[in-house]
Length: 537
Ligand SMILES: [Ca+2]
Image 1 (cartoon, rainbow, N blue to C red):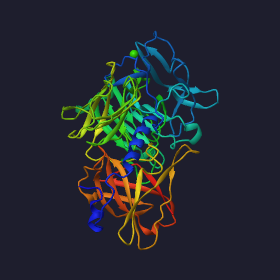
Image 2 (cartoon, rainbow, N blue to C red):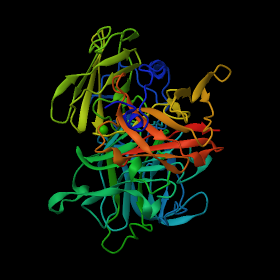
Image 3 (tube, protein in one colour):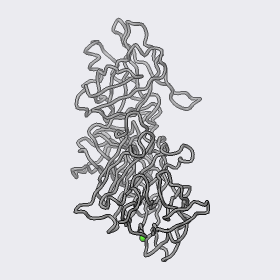
Image 4 (cartoon, rainbow, N blue to C red):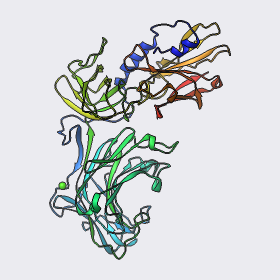
């Protein structure tokens, strides 16, 4: 499969065997070690993780003496009885009666009592609501709590998170992640849900998890977990994965707002639109017991080296792993085939079938390693184990999918002007390659070069470079939309000369003349790549 195969069928002629784009791509990949778009930070490795692959970053074990109050260094007690947007019946107080430590657990106690708050609001129930806002927040990682929930009609316990930008942009634009919610009328069921702009409240996206044999969650402690990575959130109860939500699950046109720090909340609401109000069957007081809350970061995160999305990696695609102490020095592979050890660092991928393979390495550095996901890696969850030259081991999990398209960007950040090249075919069939970006030293980044579509007698094609595309089921499943117009795709497969790089050739529609910046949207087997752009004169 030659990269200009389709073009050559139409226009039999020669083309430069080694266009300068190969060098540009090398530059792009090397630059990517300096840039990681999400702004995520990674922990120092000296913490001893309780869970392989995860480093404990923050926790409250609630192990202080019986009768202690909530640690004010970690939590703020929210107070008020205004219904909290859900027509709730409780008044949240900061009294010890409603939140205290006992036998190694936080106790949040919902009490049926008449209480008038300092604001003059009177309610017939009290309870507590704790948050880590302004004390702790994190983007991505594993968020875990071991909780014994209360029971009964009208009870609504929750372990959840809100985006830290809620004071600036409000709810639901800030995002909400419900790790565990239960309503008392469903004693055997908990819910995991995300809310964002256009998918909030009853339109939240998630799933229930139900215990077998009519068991009640209130009868025992259970472990509630989300694992959150760029573009993906997974929910677990007692280690059982029951829901995965990705950017693909959002309603059309809606924004994924789970790419910034969130803070934690714990509360027991009484009444409200969703659970309904307590009735004669409800028993008070009710307690939620929280043994611990723990937050982890992954030791290493692998993303597509093109899109910087961590949603999935395709076999043979190029990945970037981030972490700390991944290598003792920075070294770039200089020969092909690529080495599987560079300055003593190795990357081992154990795929869902249990097969382990050493990954070919493009370069290694203490904070980033670029590697090729080995050919033959099976779809499903894979374990990435990175061993540095000094023996330091970092572990991370990643999803492998046959197709996980990413497009390289000129600035190696997964967005903005494409790492691409234009090919002009003149009326006499002569061809010329033209850049679509140039380095602007004033801005210290690549900026678009306007593509001149020329006279009617000329055709201009765009060669896009990406990774994770070659395993598409057929060429017809690869679509490229340029500025709202579907462009004709002539080729989508391996770029012959650079390991792991795929090339997509598209004809630029003449209707785009004069449009300026246009978005390039690629899908392969229905999976969207990151958007990049080109400029049309
Ligand atoms: Ca505890």
